[in-house]
Length: 290
Image 1 (tube, one colour):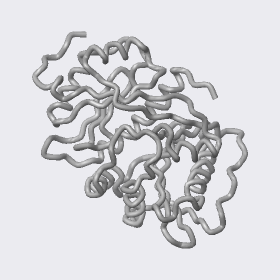
Image 2 (tube, helix red, strand yellow; image 1 turned 90 degrees about the vertical axis):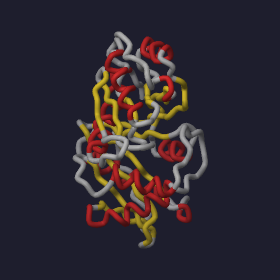
Image 3 (cartoon, rainbow, N blue to C red; image 1 turned 135 degrees about the vertical axis):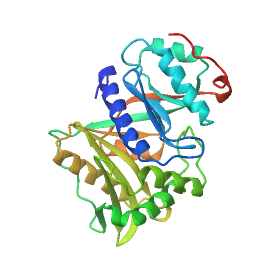
């Protein structure tokens, strides 16, 4: 599958819209409330302290970078005591990268964007009979939440991740704030049961024909039993029924998660560079002219 800047912009901006819905559902903190700000077709998102939703994504595809808007975003991050995090596609305009470098942004890591075509494809293979997949409503959120926390608090340690694992208590706070039992348009949560035991969880977001497969995990003692395969198959099937033409997954490079989805027919489309600007470079600086 070939990816150009237009496709990368479509994917990154779809993710940005989902994150914006989750961010605006997050509560205010002592350091300030959540915010969503535009930047050259993308969005700057801040949910709360150390949240994975805190990012600037979806920009860099439309030419000139608006430095005044970026400076305003940097100041809002500084008010909350965190460095700005940018997730920038390698298909973005190279001139944007040069300007970010001039402002002190440093490479922090990478993430891979993988996709598969849905329209016209054959139906995914049925899950093993001992695995059952259910859609999770708000009334059963706590069970889904427990599986998600157990999965993400015990990562498999493979590949190259840009960020260290968060303590369990902080994971619990972040998941409740951004994935809690509030209504988020277009987001579906799933739980997988292996012989009746809660074993894995995942989410699906559908937006304008694009299916984002997000947030999947398996509890440690049930890994390697086909749970993730079943969750991928179910979400692809549901995305097909929704009329989606493409499904997308974002993973850290070289992880078992990446290996798993590539075995299910996903292809590597492009990589995003994760860039950080140290907080001390923002505090006290005046806004720079465009």
